[in-house]
Image (spheres, helix red, strand yellow):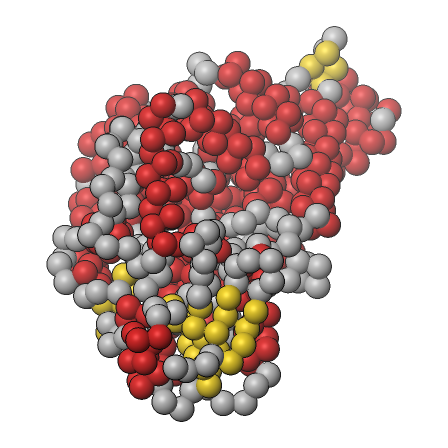
Amino acid sequence: MTGAVAEATHTARYPLVRWLKGAECLLTRVARRRVLSCFVVALVALGLRIALLPVLPIPTPVFQDEYSYLLGGETLAKGRLANPTHPMWRFFETMHVNMQPAYASKYPPGQAVFLALGIRLFGHPWFGVWLSMGLLCGCICWMLQGWIPPKYALIGGLLAVLQLGVSTYWVNSYWGGAVGACGGALVLGALPRLAHRPSTKSAVAAVLGVSILANTRPFEGGVTVLFSLLALLWWAHKLQRLRGLLDRRVVMPFMVGLLLTAGAIAYYNWRVTGHPLKLPYVLNQQQYGWSSAFWLASPSTPPSRFRDTAMEHLWQWDRWQTVRSRYRPLRIVRMMCESIYNTFLPGVGWLFALLALASLLLLSVLQVRLAFCLLGGFLCVLLSERYILAHYLGPVSSLFFLIPLFGLRLFRILKVRGQQIGLVLVAILLVISVAASISASAEKIINQEPLPYGIAFRVKVIEKLNAEPGLHLVMVRYTDHHDPHQEMVYNGADIDAQKIVWALDRGSTENQRLFAYYPTRMVWLVQPDGPTQSITPYVRQ
């Protein structure tokens, strides 16, 4: 009673503390409505990014991977899993796209599903990326609710909005990241729920997460699922709940979900590659000679032929990544650290590091140890890859918010000379976090990088030809020194229906076949390399 009286006296003496306690109570009341909290976080993420469209417009695809994902999204939006091989496919051959036995993206279809959703609902694939980011932030809030009290989960979800939902390439490109991260958040959020109180709902959430991971980031997702399963068995054993995991209400939905996922993947593989067990990614590696994703594997051998010198240069660059990683493994560690900092910690890196260090004081708590083991084990396995980008970390992205929140909870109960200063300290840390996140995002928005020269020229060509009447055929002629990362030949799912068809200039003799196939199209020659870029009417010989 004496402590309560002292605290009440202390609160009454300092109006700031009284106001902070009122704000904390309000936050707690909202956070206790768990489903509502997840929806609030998702809506904040969606509304904030839409509000920024005047200064951060819908992005232009830049990298080869993005165009491949867009092809997958457009294909699904047309109600197809794959497109028939075009009779003139050699003119349309490009990076990261399978031309035979079907014309399709080499990537798993998870990201493409959301791009297709954006096309069907809003008329543009980016809105699918936007939706996936809102879903991710809501899923992170749901995941955190399984590990920590609801008010901290709500705080973590809102921090995820600021850190991921504004200026990262996860929401400002078409590479993905958010979809795979949703799958990881569902798996990691189901983990404590299944350990404490196994139920059908938790099993469904887990198997849905596994399905998403299998169709976005199969390797990294598989690692996350394996470590999560081991953690679940350990946790359930400590709680003496192992028998509950064998309940048919848990096992049946999980087994049915896995069988449906495996069947869907096999069917998709069959439609794209002609074999239910061959992934489109593997087929593309075999056809074009790309190196393995793992640096321990031997560098690849060249394919029997290259599309042109640009494709050969890309193959050489790809092979060199493996060679560099084999002889300079610390380079991979540096890439991982840069990806973590630039995506999850911009502006708040030092603060999150401080909170993570504080959470080490709680290693005696089982869930804290498990969170560190899950993240540490995943990062160690990820170092086996020769190249690491931020979306590779998607399956464990929610852990980058969970671990600092353990430390934040510790600061909340901090006392100095019997006086509770934790509430004020937490408020200060949160204000700093929000300010730092906003500042880092504002800096990225103000200092937006211009489009690469090749992509910028492609955009100019599209604008010019869209203003011209009729249908167009663009023949792209590269020099021998063309940068393979400035690829311009990309087409949609229905090439013949496009206003602008992009094709490789394969020489006057071979080109006649393409001209005969498109007799009514206006033909242009685009030369993107050299000191001057040009688009001129093609002179047929």
